[in-house]
Image (cartoon, rainbow, N blue to C red):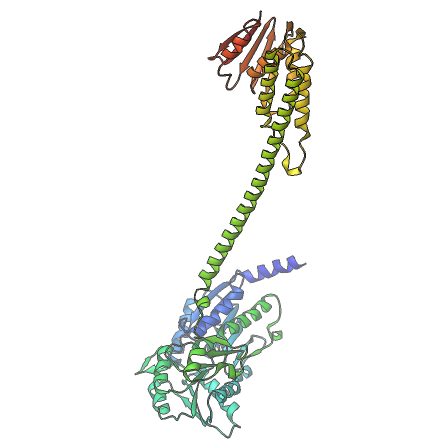
Length: 543
């Protein structure tokens, strides 16, 4: 069901044309904030959105100007019927109300940032809903009282626009019953007139700055420059009611309870979404949004020797304050910290792995030493036991055992499981028994079978990997020990042994034995040995 509703909403939304009509210019921070709040909720809804700016801060909304703007909208959008019109601030809403019966005849109207509360009596709730902007005159007056001792006089300053007049009316109504303060209300579009009225102020006074867009020598003046000019004459603290004025350079603004442009835009766009989801506009209530944020300009409060902690605003937004080293370089400090942390972790991992490798290496060394010791003991016992026999046979067995020691060092034992490597003892015992069984005499035996027995004993070493035995066995009458010594000296991994009548052919797939002359000398009465180094093979013929 949820997906069906989403599908229906998407199809419904795709057919909607929306006009966002702004009273002021895109260069005006308040208007930018409202538009940003609107688009935040609507920009990804596949709606066709058009944006226009009346720019009534720069161009006074005279009948002639409004008529020209009307013709502009009528001409530009004559083929685009607007299903929804979103207005920001009073002048845009007034324009839409004026032309609701012609160019906006079939449009549903949503408004934001409207100061004139009486407009609710002019609208048809079947077609209109929105967000009113309610100031906090009493909250800002209390802020004034906290910052200036013996407050006697309050200047309330605004321009002469519709929005400013509506706000001024709200302030006058809120201050009507306050008898112990003198309120001076200044509604002027010319900044020269404003300055002439405030420059004779006394230090016991304060200035409340409400909506304004001033002219200077008959030309529109940027709001930042206007505030700087006011601050150059009015040396006492200035309180504001709009968020974007809180941090103007070279000003005496100390903060105030302010309205939030972004919040205004977000709230009106939520009402639009409710309508797009099928809710009737008359059932979408009007909202009276109060100034919901307290801004404090820390630098200017300090300039006027006002203790920020004594004001009691715990959740205030602090602007223009001195930043700590961490705050100034927070991004770089965090990045550096993360890099250092990663490096430390990496080094610790390497140290841990090195420690484990050292332990593993120590166990390998210890195991090899144990193997060497045991082989030496076996060799000593064997030599002692058979010392009365022919020296050459003892020497042959010694060579076999030494060869075994050399190759047993390549055995990979499972150190991780702390096994005692019992296989090494078995290999040693087997080779001793293999030699002892035929030590005392020459005897008849099968060549192929003898080779297989030797390889079977050595199968747990890397030495005999990939050795292939082929051919027909044949019987000889030889000294088994001497034959075993010869064979071990000729065997290498990755080799092939082929047996035929009185002949043993050993072929090497990799490196072959480098020097067979010592073997030839020792076996010249038993074998004829030929080496073909080019073809990597050795041929043994029994005499």
